Length: 424
Image (cartoon, rainbow, N blue to C red; front, side, top):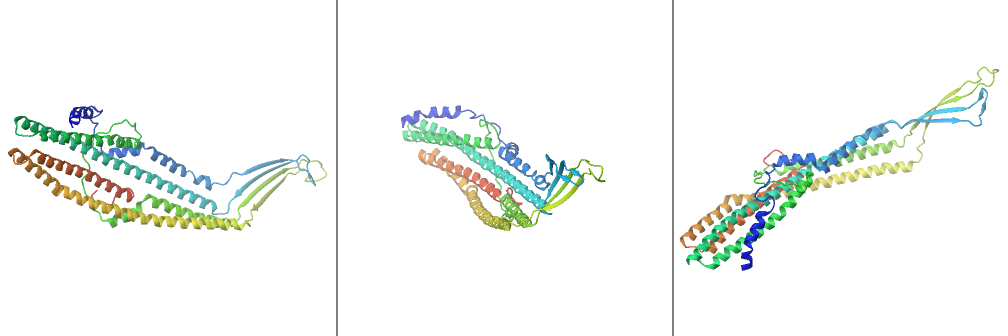
């Protein structure tokens, strides 16, 4: 016990001398922090690049293949009536069946839509992480503030107890109890304070800042309650969720894939032009030495129907899989919103209990205990219990405030990144 009492000054010195204690950076505004993070976040930038790259796909799949030029030099020239053939120049161009290139381009467009949805999903996730961490920081900072205030009260209690003990109107147990309580609160404060650097590092990682970058103490968060009906949130979520938009793009892509697979039963064409040089060898024939020119039209014969039927079936099954994924995702979204919405209601009710009863009752109990202690009708230990009860209620209230905002943020995430009109 005596060793614990002697350690109090050292603990206080360690707590006060830590870097940044007592001189915090200006607290960041949540909106500004989100804007900075979205501007600097590397994961979002990577998603932007993937989306941008996908938009360059359409010209690649809709443009005709390069024409092929070939040259033939006869080493042993074949003889014809008008003279020997010496050189053959040929140009050919493959032309897909009408509609194939357009379908490939439309498929590329749907792939780009899917990448865009992934990009917006990444943005939503980043905003969610920033807000969740921000509210965790609020809980830590306000808990430390309340504990610091409680320590100041304990110092006063301890001084009064020591004065009463010195004059013979008090007892040593009250002094020791007060000092032990101070040690316990200092330990709790240190434990809570240790979690702060990890939260700060998490936000710094999201906004691509050095891990040592400080974030000021957060003094307040939005306390408004969210009251929009659950059905409206579900309705919006089913329209706005990026995962659903991505899977819809995949479904449209598989439909286009089915159409393209069916067109594979139609032939592609090949146009070819040839120019043959014939040197003049005789003047007896009127058209001797006249060069030859020809045009040829060819097409492939799609007789390998087995692989083409397999491609059609693959596209159909792929679409069915995407549709099942979409239905499952819709069910999951409904369940997520129902679960979080219920938690919000429960936490809101608990906050009402704190604000309308528990805090006032604990403060009244402490005032009554202080009055009784001054008149000698209440001992020091009962006064300490009343103060401790108020501390626990204040810490619980801060915790539920942070929980409520975290739950609203989760609901916002589940709804696709924003909530329908209403209090937030």
